[in-house]
Figure 1 (cartoon, rainbow, N blue to C red):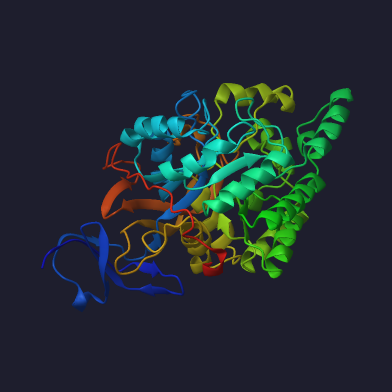
Figure 2: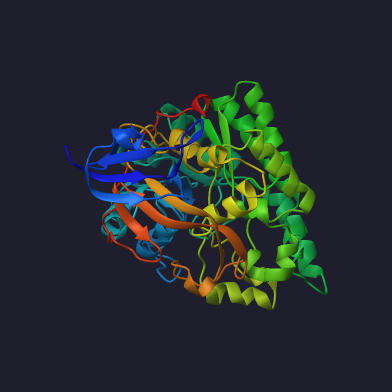
Length: 460
């Protein structure tokens, strides 16, 4: 039997260890793992000696803004950036215009984006004050999970009060879904923003001061209490603080079904980046101090952070630049989908902060398990989709914002020198990205309908 592809000589990162072993791939699946003598003949043979083979990343927190405004990011440019960053599956968030908060909008969005995607994808459903009756229909049409804000965000995606949120939690629990929440206390933020408005001088660092750590920690604690009342599976989005992680850890020790994610920018940037990169380092929750960053790494290594995601928020260069004069004028968000894996290799693995196995767990296996995609996604094993990212662990390179695949060419990491580079991304046995070139076009990515009720932190 002749197979489609054999990868030889690479260091393969499995769920428990890393081994130099060959892989045979046929019809989009991994079919053989072993030494060269056990490999079948192949139509294509890739010698990956000196390179590392990781499972393709699963990123459940991306914003591409389809159907509008396309100036920020569309599904084509966004998923090209994903492929260039080693991400083979994305779950795209519902904060768009109009937001994905009804089954009709969900279906419209799916029709629009499916022909554009370079990687496999799923879609979230939104939770806003007036769409509680849409939760069950959104689950039926394929939403992978649900998202809510309890602080102000985009005007088209209003925050929800605790009463309606409690009811939303009950309904999401009934359909076996996950509710993910942006956790910051709105009243605390408003108080400190009012102080900032009265200040004579505003510096970029004041953005962090206007959204203090207690705003995040209190909100996480309150959401855990509400979720406990309803039994819903709760997921805390983009946790920036070690204290927030510890609150979640305490709830899990009491048996509650709650998970959390953080992002590369919270692990490699401190609040001082606001003074250095200004609006390009502005995000919500904000960056924290150096002691917090150090504590986050320790908690990650201890397994208390479930997933590392991009929270890719590609606002336009023009909108971001407004914050150069006054940080308050820039929208919050980090343009980080493409550089997340290299950052974690360079700042994590190469500095001894985590192993390759742990990196694959947090950026691929755990997200796949949490959102019901495992064992098809998130692992390198017999029968799994042949989704792989091949990296050169020793190659040093400089991040150049102008060369990124994302539509808007800015980055708080512009000019950073990193060690560890994505060489090739393979999706279901097909190379989709190789050293700056794309060999599978838009529309190759498959839609992955939600698997509500098919995930648990007990497996993570």
